[in-house]
Picture 1 (cartoon, rainbow, N blue to C red):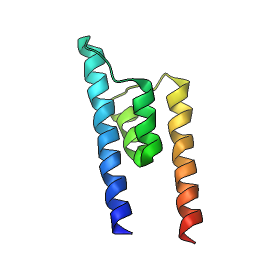
Picture 2 (cartoon, rainbow, N blue to C red; picture 1 turned 180 degrees about the vertical axis):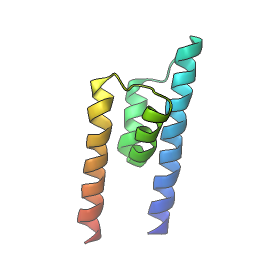
Picture 3 (spheres, rainbow, N blue to C red; picture 1 turned 120 degrees about the horizontal axis):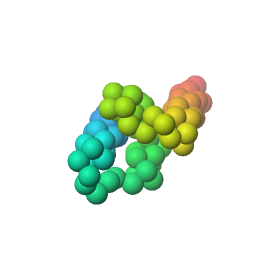
Length: 86
């Protein structure tokens, strides 16, 4: 169980960092991180980091794909975790 928690912590930190980096790149006019990559890190277990990054950095909060998609990914991940742990 601790391996899974460690993985979720690492992927959430990565997701959070990617949202911050993409926001920085957007402000400074650099090449951006794709939306697909941002969503895939959330889907890979980084839901908490993605959601925190969205609102901490005020990034992608006007895109419905993210505003609804990231919480939906989180609900599915939480439901799956509950299903597999019982």
